[in-house]
Image 1 (spheres, rainbow, N blue to C red):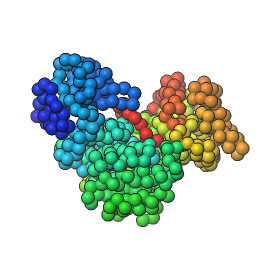
Image 2 (cartoon, helix red, strand yellow):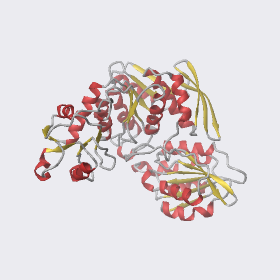
Image 3 (cartoon, rainbow, N blue to C red):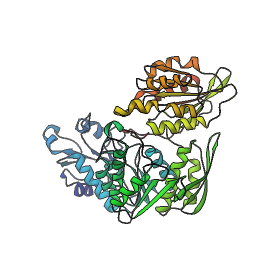
Image 4 (spheres, one colour):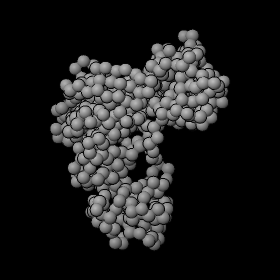
Length: 489
């Protein structure tokens, strides 16, 4: 018989809540969202930015919640409810206390991931690679903030072998309290880039904020840093100041502990060779892009540090695909032929834009086809926005783009820069206007790449294009993606 995730009594003890009614002997899961709640779960009625979970107690009961965690101040207005309650001073704080209890009982070897680019992708690759050897618990979607991390930790089964947590931030001092809950054995920083730069003084301030992840490492824990990142030296210094005694690196730089020694793009995916702490490893990814291969170096290095078999982890990566909007390819029918659509629409910042344009540049068009970049605004760049959009002209040209179709107020700066350099480009005020004109620009053999910040709406543009033109040979990832607050780019 499978052991329950929690008992009601254990949750009461961990949270310090006051029981009202008989505590259930078995709790199967932890939920804050009635849309995904399953029968037998405990429901934490946390108060979010837009909604208060106490408004959803009846739907939680209808969905089969076995226990409700509610705020003491809300209790008088709740009336009689047909399921047991735990009454607490603060529901979010109670969930954090349950997360602490989960970490205290955990047998898992734990890795935490942050960075300006590639957090969720690296976390999912770790989930897949480590799963070749043992049970893995990992954050759902991009549950990487002040409620997502404790929720993910509270869901950690006691006997899981490996656990992977993503930790994000928009401001300083956001990672620090979260990583001290997780207390990982390994902490990865994928890359420092000017994401959310509007909230920071400069790039070094972002480095300091990301470096907070090292403060939560367990005694003897290991930092894993991108050797190709110009901020790697600063991150190493931050890690040492946090008391970290083992610092490892990944990338192409000579001397990297987990070093890429060979890379070849394929029609579908990539082939790579690497040295992982001196051991030669060969692997293949179904998803394309040099940036994905580089992140998998951190995955293989972390697997080694956690005690997993690196050869098994590398072999497992051959069946792993990056998530929706992160490089999935679709072959779409147009006229008498086909075009290739590369969906990079999940999110965008300057570093991920460059990586996506590099992927476009490495993809060969068909006969008579062209490379076309569909680019939308990168958000949260503050006073740096104009310069960073204009700077994309160089990677657009390096990618050999024949046509750039741009949408959004900030992209007008790039439009003007490209026109000055003789690159064919058109600018549209919105993603909707770009979409309306798109059919007239496409022809058989084209390779089209779409990327923008999430709220610009390029995911809808991609969905519309796939629905309209059909997808006879889609290679996109079909794995489900739960509700999330996504910060990954």
